[in-house]
Image 1: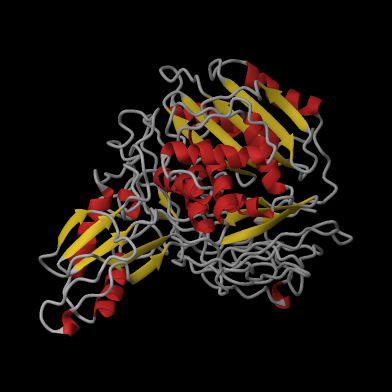
Image 2 (image 1 turned 180 degrees about the horizontal axis):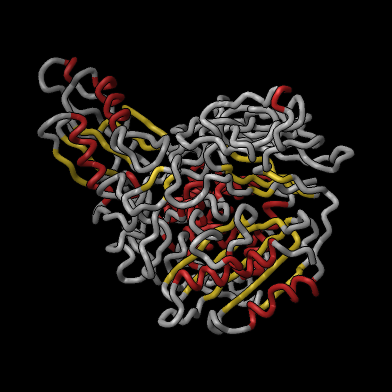
Length: 620
């Protein structure tokens, strides 16, 4: 079985033609807007005689030109075009032949690979991860971190020794490109973007891994708080450990456990509702927040495929038959407890990397949906959403907080004729729903969106019957993770995003979780991989493993798929990578005592990237 390696196309690099730039001059990748997903259930079977896998890649609209081959011609995407958007490997999928992206591929496309919708999910395919337009990604007082749009327009099938893994392929060609004709067969073969490795890839030895990375781990330039775990995904063999069972401050690698818990508790196809019901007083409607952090006001939205208040307003107007609305009551009582978590830095909200967490908000509580960097947030996100909704319903509509009518509340009295009587209190007048949970998890991981993370932690709490609060989300997440039999000694959470310095997670727990998600034993966790940023390609790893990093820190480009973490004095990286021999490894690198007065955040990241690069290059 195989694990594809993603290699940057020849046009890569910051500011290259074909890559749009945000206001800060950073590369930004738009994603086609679609909140639907085609789910593919993974199963790996024996490879064909060549021992390599066929990988089908979906095409999706993108402004970025297709990679070109060595002769300057645009190559065809190998394999089956399939359904556009996220793809998971079908239960009936077999592996055989060989396909490349950027090359001609095997004739006829991948053998036995099909794309099928799963129960409860849309059947026409998705357009990739829900994209965050900007604002609060990872907390990084060291620097303002840009937020990119989307996690990729397709999800590739990644299979290794019975391991099915998802990873986002950024920006496929805008339209399929015809395969090279026989007349052009003398051209040199194009360099593949995906390199399929054999299912007989040797596992590195513990001694070989130690020789490759121990000198970097133990030299102390990241401070005394470096914790490392490296595990073979196929067998679970620990290949290297350094303080691996000791909890460390995980920063945004916390989102890995939040993602796993959300997928386990709600399922990949769950959608978060936002509802409007009739109020108790004449002309009153109640806007009920269900905890969707991506809800938008209108067409201008921070997240692709978001539910919209303008759609909801039109539903309400139709349901009321033109009767005027005089008051919008905001019910955000689903979430309880403090609006910010213990352990958050004092500037977490003012810097734009966090927000007050309420059950009703629009655009992740951003004041400007398209703001990038540390985006300004509403001080009262629920009331801001209520005011926006009231403006969509008409003029002179008042807004205030309140509760939904209790069952059995009598209808408002008619003002004159019986026809003027309002609907029974509690009658649903409109409803919109978020993108599916898979999309929310993807944008949380790819863009390190803290507000989405906190909203998803509360969904975990609701699903298991806990209060929808920081404490309830943390305890529910711990319960679900412990239920998988993972090493939870010292595992402590106070939030779902990793903004809190009171969190404690060991590298051994992170690698065990990643391995569990990848070994096929718990398919509900498989979608964890589709949102992981790709080194040198996407999300918070878009600008890493490439210039201006030192050459020794660039070897993980296309091979590393991992969640980043950053706070003052903390840098972290955890996920999976493919070795030079084609072996899939889980790794976690947590450094929580970085001497940040002498080591810049970029230098700290480069040091972790060098360790990951040495692992990726390992033929040991």
